[in-house]
Length: 394
Image 1 (cartoon, rainbow, N blue to C red):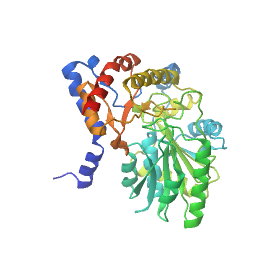
Image 2: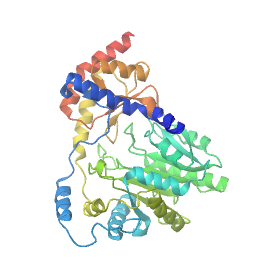
Image 3: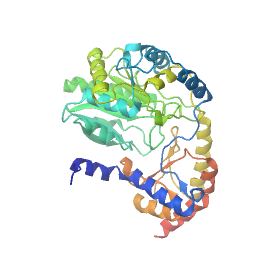
């Protein structure tokens, strides 16, 4: 076998979403795409804001020499200045251009962060349920993940986090609004978490970083505001992208922001800038950097997702599901009446595609993405009822 054994094992662990995607392709070919209820992929379908097209067109017509040349590995200085100004408002911390680096999406930003922080064997605490790729990002750079469960409503369990902290802990990675649950962690819980990590760092004579993955920050409902992570501890790092709030997942444009008062900030930023280069990213896409610099106060209409959430909640309520209503992102994470993998098989019999919760570190649940036309969501109502009846009859 020519493929590395580790990659073979990774392929098995990451197979649930891929399996659902492949199964969906087969079902759509057999029954017609209009007859399949595919809630498996978190691929934003709301179009980018109108201003995106205007800005993109203007910048694409710019033929000034050097517009497609290399720039500093951390990104164009003027782009970082624009982002720092916006983040200063969002995070309630005074950020400068030097506190921000442009990256190839949030995934690139997280890999740059892990590369810069981790020595072999260092531990990163991840809260379950979690985005499936986190385990791989940590392993990419010699780290070890420790999975800590959240409470029954997917809020931070501070006692569980505290119990998991050791002298090897290098970071706690959180995601709020959360994929797959849609939970938004409260300001109180985040402040308490920051203080806990500061105390633990003093105890173990080691800096423990709080890293927040925030691509869904602007996809929130019911007037909720996502609290500032950079206000919780000076050892905090925000990683995000424009994949969701501008509906640009394929453009791979994101950023890292570090607390301006972080100890040894310069050393960390130098490491991140180097990591951006040597991981093969070199720099974030030049054209997209210039585009997002002009779109700092623009985002998609999240009310579209909020409306879909309401339609989907009614579908699930009528079918008898139990779930925590999401405060953000575009996922529902209901409990399953039987084993989650078995239930996904039952759903497929009704032409519904969902992802088992165990793929996100939480067996006994399924993830349903509502970045899909609400007419399709509404049309799935009877199929969900039949699936639930079948499962309860088993």
